[in-house]
Length: 119
Image (tube, rainbow, N blue to C red; front, side, top):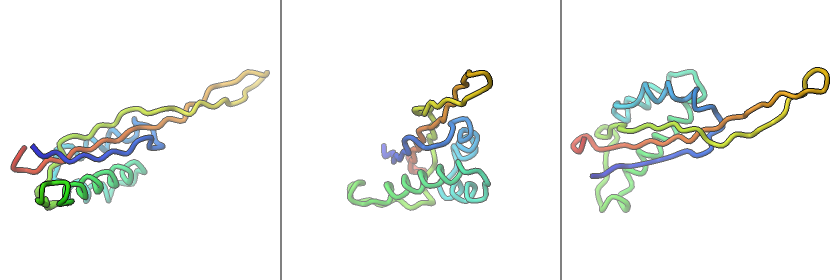
């Protein structure tokens, strides 16, 4: 079974902001997913769009696929995983010498595409 993966590790955005976009494109054809994400205003849509384009490029690479190239119209987004990544921990000074923690979150975006005849 041919599955084409791509991932973006340590994306500088909270996983909570990217997950709703992942729910939108999961199960769509790859070209439909790219068209849908193109019109979403969120910054996470740009990141997810780049990862899907990378997975499509992996599917079209003939050396990797035993001489077979897959067209974008026949690929389905079967898996989109948004996992939490490492956090940058910072301190925000507050009144009377106290401090509040700031967590600058990141996430790992993983996409898997499968040809429609193998789904």
